[in-house]
Image (cartoon, rainbow, N blue to C red; front, side, top):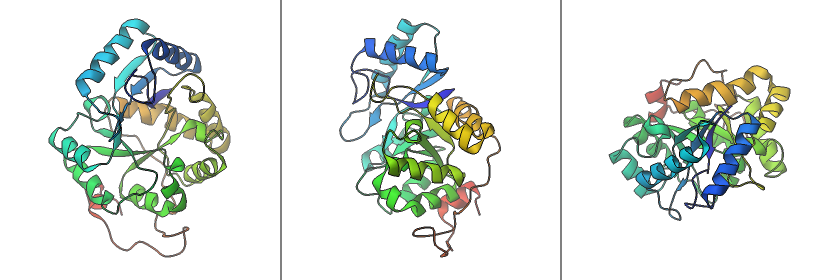
Length: 268
């Protein structure tokens, strides 16, 4: 399995505190069947993001673990004005392995309406957003129609594997299941932070998806799609998402305006 969201780099944020913990996290991931890990430290107002420093830490971990797993580098990107401007000026600084996929994290309290414009600006410099753990976001739990619009326009979605096992509560679990059933989810990831409360376990989420939605879906979310992202390739064929042209509580009101982002990705 391929894990595209993992706070493995040590001493940077609320993830691994030291290299010994990082090595143990790799060992857990290997036992769980994970073969590739993207190290994704936070890039927000609280935690400074320095790609050069992150690359040095990544190399230190590689030296300690040998060839146990294949490591890559990205970040958990917060859509602040400063971050967006820097990403526009320096394409590849924040993306997964310097290619075209960008993990995007929203604040828990407010998601500005200008986000659509931000997504469009990022696509201009060939960065495709992957929205991280929307099932855990209180705003999107209340207003899933906003996620529907972004998916409709071509954004991708990553759900935390442990949300499906109840780690983040009943609401996150129920919302994640609904997103899965409507084919809004493109990836599972661990969003691992430590050894105990948030360990790098992906197999349990894989099993939930396989039992609920079928093995093909589990393979697509845990193997094929994240592997394409790791190497900056196009995703293969995806199932058609449903219930995208609705607002509020997925009522009968349809979207009528085709956004700039939709035109960029050629979505109807």
